Length: 324
Ligand SMILES: [Zn+2]
Image (cartoon, rainbow, N blue to C red):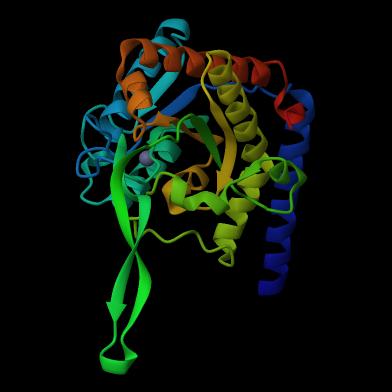
């Protein structure tokens, strides 16, 4: 008896499913893809100043550029809903640790129903901002000296070295846009610059203890797959557009890069296309001045707005089904 009831229940459920899904797909045209809600994430903040320059911090510069970016978008796209992960110099969500802040960022993006996530950061070459003095050998003068005692006494040639402190400029500069590395065997992924060899030269968010998502965890695997299928190409498109805009403004583009790193864990954790833009090296004297200046910030904002516009237009020119 119980079994019969169960069979009836399963059967009814199947009819329920059949009567709903295909009919709806065929009778209504799929909604146009667009960006209704944009998450803007100024990196770091509060307890976490991020990379330090000679006179500014990554948290300050990222916030300033992020707010200007949002303001510019508001003017051009009044219907766009913009959600900031922070609007002042605090850790996102006023959290006490960087990891809690990262989780808050991802949760906020997801619960706000974001269609796109753009994080703004500044890069750092890891050495002292501006530059540093390095002791280098400038000369080598030979002289004779006596060694040993008694019969073993002999004269040998020794050298006196002269040194100088030479100024080494912190030269790394330019822009980079990151996307999350999904599947290394994917053709598209292989066309993107690999970055893992120069970890030392990159911004280090290594103080985080947040563990990378474990790809053997089924839930994580499912999420990565969804990201790979639906969001990866869109993220890559936008990243390309952003770097192209930077180049047109005369910036040096270090390219679109992908990385499996906790610092951009937030990209993978958000259920939407997402990019992380490194707007310039705060560790480079000239570039620090540029990314702090009105001229520099306005140019960066224009580049980001142009890329956003192109991305949105491209999405809207296609239907959801054809958008891959
Ligand atoms: Zn950063």
